Amino acid sequence: MNKQTVKVVGGGLAGSEAAYQLLKRGYAVDMIEMRPLKTTGAHKTCDLAELVCSNSLKSTEPETASGLLKAELALMDCMLLDAAKQTKVEAGGALAVDRKKFSAKVEERLREFPDFRIIREEFTDFDDTPTIIATGPLTSDVLCEKLKSISGGFYFFDAIAPIVTDIDMDFAFWGGRYGKGADYLNLPMEKDEYLAFYDALINAETVKLKDFEGAEVFEGCMPIEVMAKRGVDAIRFGPLKPVGLFHPETGKKYYAVVQLRKENLGGNSFNMVGFQTNLTFGEQKRVFSMIPALRNAEFLRFGVMHKNTYVNSPKLLDKGFRVKGEKPLYIAGQLSGVEGYVESILSGLIAGVNMARELSGKDIIVPPITTISGALAAHTTACTENFQPMNSNFGILPFIDCKDKKNRKKEYYKRAMCDIMPFVENLDK
Ligand SMILES: Cc1cc2nc3c(=O)[nH]c(=O)nc-3n(C[C@H](O)[C@H](O)[C@H](O)COP(=O)(O)OP(=O)(O)OC[C@H]3O[C@@H](n4cnc5c(N)ncnc54)[C@H](O)[C@@H]3O)c2cc1C
Image (cartoon, rainbow, N blue to C red):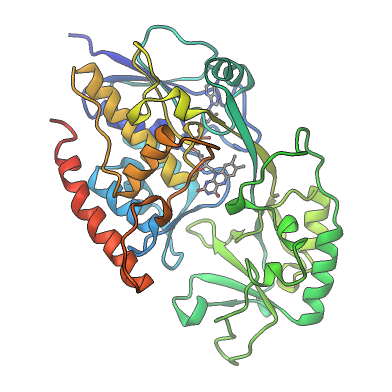
C-alpha cells in the first residue's frame, strides 16, 4: 500500500524535525525547499537545517530555561538535538555545533527513510495535500503575502554576528569566566583601546534598512552598535563584560574582553559572541580590527541584519501549531511565533507529531503548560494582546512561590520533568 504523503515546506530546523517525526511514524515526506534556486539573504548554503547565525544552541544547564527545553526534547526523541550532540564543539555549558557537520548529520538521518524526498522549488500556494509550513523568519515574499492575507503578519529585525579567523594569539587567551572551562578565546582590551573602539563603533556607518523606522529590534539579538549607543559602558556590561576573566598565566584583569566561540571542530574559525551587527562590511573590518587580537584577522563571514517575519498565530492557529479549519495544515518554526533555534525545533516536533496523529484519527496533544515546551506552544495560540515571538524563559511558566531564586529554578525543572512524562508516554497512543 502506498504511504500517505505530507508536504513539509522549508528544510530548516523546524521542517527537518517535523519531517523526521512524520517519517518515523510511517508517512512519506516531500520536503519543499527553495534553496539554492532562491535564497533568503541569511542562508549561505543549500544544506538542510542550516544555522544562519550563531553556531550555539545555547545552554544545556538544567537550571536554565534553554537547558530545561533540551531535557524535555531529549525525552521526545528529538532528532535534531541528537544530531547536535553528535556534532558538538566544546563551548562550556552551551551546546555549540560544527554547523556543516550538523546539517550533514540531519540530512543523513532523513535519508535513512526511503520515503523522504527533497524537492527544490519555491512553494507559493496551498493544495489539498496535508502540509506543514516551516519557511522560517525569511519566508519568501510571495508566500509571505499569501500568509498575510489569511492571518495578518508582522516582522521585526534580527542580526547576525561575524565569523573570524587568524587571531593574534599574543593578544588572546583561552578560558571561561571564573576559571570555568577553557572553551572561549578571550580578546582583552585596555581602557584606551576600548574607548577608541567604542568611539569608532558608535560613529560607524550602518546599512540603511527599508522599513526600519518604527520596526522592533528583538532585544535578545540586538546589534552591538545599537546597544553601544545606550551608553559608554553598556557593552562592558554586555558582550564585552570583563568580570571573572583574567589571564591564566599572569592573573591580569582587563577593562573589556571580547569572547570568541569555536565555529568548527578544527577550532580555527570563531564566532564573535554578542557581535550581531548592521555595520557595513567595510566598517566591520575597520572597527572590529581595532580589537588588538583581530588586527590581522580575516572575516570569513560578515554580520548582517534581516527582516524576521511571523504570523498572527493566536488568530490563525489552534493548539499544537495547527491552522484552524478543515484542512490538515500546520505552521511551525519561527514563522509560528516561537523565537530561537531550539524553540523552532520544538515547534517542528509538535507539528510533526500532531500531523501524524491527525492523519491516523487521533486527537491533537500538547505538552503541559508547566513545561517549557507546553508554555511555548500555549503562547502561540493563547496570547491575547500584543503578540510577540517568544523564546524559552522561566517567565512563561506558572510561577512557583519559592524565596530562593536558585531553588525556584530547580523546582521548575523538577516539576517540568515530572509533568512531561504522561505526554511523552502518550505521544503515539
Ligand atoms: C538573521 C537571523 C539570525 C538569527 N540568529 C539566531 C541565533 O543566533 N540563535 C537562535 O537561536 N536563533 C536565531 N535566529 C532565529 C531562528 O531561530 C532561526 O531563524 C531559525 O533558523 C528558525 O528556524 P525555522 O525552521 O523556523 O526557519 P529556517 O531555519 O530559516 O528554515 C526555513 C526554510 O524555509 C525555506 N523557505 C522559505 N520560503 C520558502 C518557500 N516559499 N518555499 C520553499 N522553501 C522556503 C528557507 O530557504 C529555509 O531553508 C535568527 C534569525 C534570523 C533571521
